[in-house]
Length: 369
Ligand SMILES: Nc1ncnc2c1ncn2[C@@H]1O[C@H](COP(=O)(O)OP(=O)(O)OP(=O)(O)O)[C@@H](O)[C@H]1O
Image (tube, rainbow, N blue to C red; front, side, top):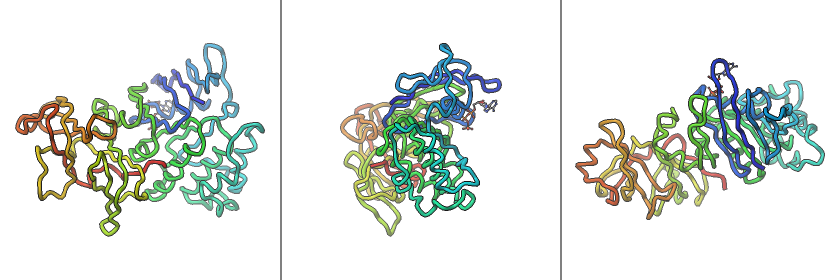
């Protein structure tokens, strides 16, 4: 089941255009600066905004096709929607809210049962409560449960964690991360937050100025330096992928092994062996020719693979930590052009990249199992 989106829609003065696919496997994060057009695309795919032209299709079947006059109403599209504010029915219990999604699902539709969703989201104790008796995080869990129980053919989520405080966000991220492994359906996920993208996204679609500026596998896209100016808060940097090998509880630090080397980062709440992604901004990485004996920073040995001149006086240097430039095993360092010369950096030369543990962006997060 793939969700295909190819839309042009008028929003005030702007015309938002988007063409991309949301694959059945994993999460597709839709990112970009505020006003880029992310929510408009999601609403149009859901049938809540009418595009000027284009097509939305699930597995080749049109939900909207301007040329053929097809425009299914939202409920007939059978998409599960989750917004920032749970949008629960205020006078109904949590159980009734959950079942509200289920009664509209066609009898023959496959999908999870109430018990399974309740267990996954940990909402058993909440079933008898009303929405006003729930915390923000609990409300969002119920909203996700309701969407799942409607047996949707795809899930569309628009900043579902944006209204939550950091601990609740973190907790709910864990629940969201568990979804793709359990139910195979396209998930389109609009967010501004790097930790959500790092943790959840398999694919990333980047919107800028009402258009899709780039799309691709999450690791490659999040390490693509040329996209820096478009991503706003997601400053240029690279993503490392590794496994937790040690938890230094007394220090609240974790050690992650990346390409055979140890990286110390602020504590990641994940079991030993868990796969994690770390994002490190290029401007936080310094380069030397050799390991400095007394440094407290992370020092990773690698090979220079690329040097890209940036606006003077800067240059970006890519360092491969492993044998090759595998995604998830390269760092970018933003240094001065003078340093490139004085250190004698050139493709193929060895170099040591160093950065402080605190430079690991946001909260490093474990990937889903
Ligand atoms: N109700 C509306 N009427 C007219 N124009 C709108 C409306 N809502 C949004 N727009 C405009 O449409 C464009 C896309 O907005 P949209 O909300 O889709 O962006 P976004 O990327 O989701 O932003 P944010 O991250 O801030 O939610 C913007 O130029 C915005 O000003």
